[in-house]
Length: 461
Image (cartoon, rainbow, N blue to C red; front, side):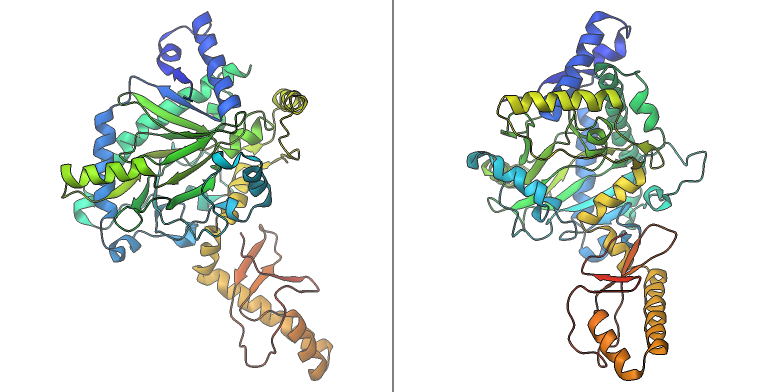
């Protein structure tokens, strides 16, 4: 089963009120509704630029880990710079709604089992491709941080030009598709593009070291969806990407034709704003037989090149301060489509509620699940100090209210040792890890609540 091919050239070169342009826009929207993905043809895209990009990223990720760590920014939730392997967790490994989706698939069409999967063995680099700072004070500065240029001089000199050139090609293509999708859904052409004017768009290549993780059925990126609006990919040198079409339940091995073609997938922001009419596309990256064939071929053809699988990926976002809520007409259409599917015997599970929120809130909520923002708390001296101070104040309050013996009983029952503390504040809820002196306290339970201070086993921001 192949994905529909959408020709962006028809939209770019023809009058937008022409019948063939409108038909191609409808085709694009329908492809996203049915498959959650499509292949996009854009004659402006250069395969040579993609090759240059892949070469540079292979060289970058072939560096020693000590060099790569210089480009980490965990205090920013890894939203710029490098994320090393075994950091990012697939949400579906512990997310019950996602696991139910897997259960409903035919066993032959299911992804590789992620229930016992450790964090993904892939690395990633986030290179921001925003239009610049918005003409207003953003409430989400951490999602709009400045870029990190690698430290290594032989990489650094080429980096900005190569990243910006390939990133711009994919950004231009996906913005064109966002306009086509809006038209195809019966909306003004600029609806989505304007909403993403100041989005924290990211050129986000992933890297998997196939000399370490090159055995068959290794999960490089576990079954998941993307949190952004639209994700666009260039060709990788190594196969292994599988996607699932929403209305077919079939696993589709992705094959991007050489030349001017890109893969586009729907993300959670598009699902949210359409009220579920378009669903974020599930996908995984694994080592399969085709991956192994390419590994062996490249060992012979280019023995001096690193065996690193690079994904040429770009995440297109809506602006962080944009008010994200379902468009009424699309939400109503989603309900009609859902009812039709149910009548055909295709139960899509419980109806999802899409509450109104800022896009930045939606992003932060999703980052909790893949355990990136927890690193932000762990690496922030200010937040750790705040947690310690809050905890000490709480203990002192208990001591002043009770006698010493009663206080020790209460503290022993309610304050987890080396657990997370939720600090209430006017800002978004912060849960920060801090270590209490353990000698004075007995073994305690993993989750208790006392007064306004809640202790949980999960770190969030």
